[in-house]
Amino acid sequence: PQPSIGVLVMAYGTPASPEQIERYYTHIRHGRKPTPELLAELQGRYQAIGGISPLMHHTHTQVRGIQAALDTLAPGRYRTSLGMKHAAPFLEESALALAQSGVKQIIGLVLAPHYSSMSVGEYMQRARTAIPAEIPFTAVESWHRAPGYLEYLTEQVKQAKEHQLRESGIAEERLEVLFTAHSLPMRILAQGDPYPTQLQETAQAVATAAQLQHWSIAWQSAGRTADPWIGPSILDVLPELAAQGVQGVLVCPAGFVSDHLEVLYDLDIETIQLAQSLQLAFARTALPNNDARVFATLADLIQDHVAAQD
Ligand code: FEC
Image (cartoon, rainbow, N blue to C red; front, side, top):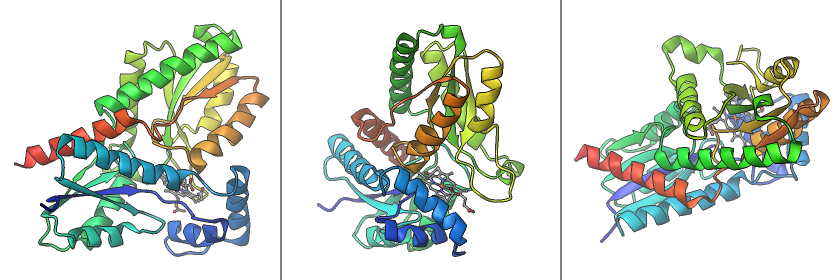
């Protein structure tokens, strides 16, 4: 029989080639072309990580992994489809094709753990608009405390911390673990957006499980706009930590699930340079990329979501 449940897996998207950067950037800016300076700056960042981002590759792997995990739970029941926010296949297109494939309902899942009206909320709204009214569409809105995801982060933090302490020779009380996510404009907070609380909850759960002594959350990758963005920015936190006598930082980019520009450039190039100038030892944890446990926990969430509707 045909799969009866469609799962629209949504991700940010990245330019497929350097020539696509301008179109991509214009899409992110809601149709306004970037200035030549802004464009050159973004092209330079992609150049610095090797020309294009590995995000597309990881996203495809993740969708396949989630499909495989769902097939293990319920063979033949689910059909996954990838739709992206800022690159083809755009999520509207994929949502419509999925609706027309014969599924009876569609579940939306975004490859980002924390809900904000300006991130996950936008994906969901765009998907809802594209799906014909007769096909029920519901969403897994956040998964910042999904067991397999917390276990994955805890394991990475423990391993990376032990390695960093061994390599650098610094004492544990001189090491700060920073959990980061993408910053968003402050205006989201006025309507009680859960985004910062959810990052705090992820961080607290991992800190408890990994028995961390010193940890906090910080925000990264704020956009180049005039709005005030949620802080503290990791770039402001490092000098403060150094001034307090901290000797090393371990960054856990908990808001992301794969290696991409915001990790490989913003952390591995920009933030590392700052850490070096402050003589802070720097390390970061690995991203889930192709981790089967994370796929399994997402499949469980989808299955639970469906069960809760019955
Ligand atoms: O590797 C890659 O090629 C793509 C990396 C990438 C990811 C990503 C994730 C998030 N963003 C979020 C919010 C915003 C807001 C603006 C914004 C702008 C950019 C620009 C690039 C970019 N984002 Fe992104 N984001 C990635 C890439 N992002 C490039 C444009 C240049 C710049 O500002 O750096 C500001 C839009 C505006 O101008 O109005 C807001 C959020 C996430 C994490 C959740 C998710 O994945 O959806 C939130 C990956």
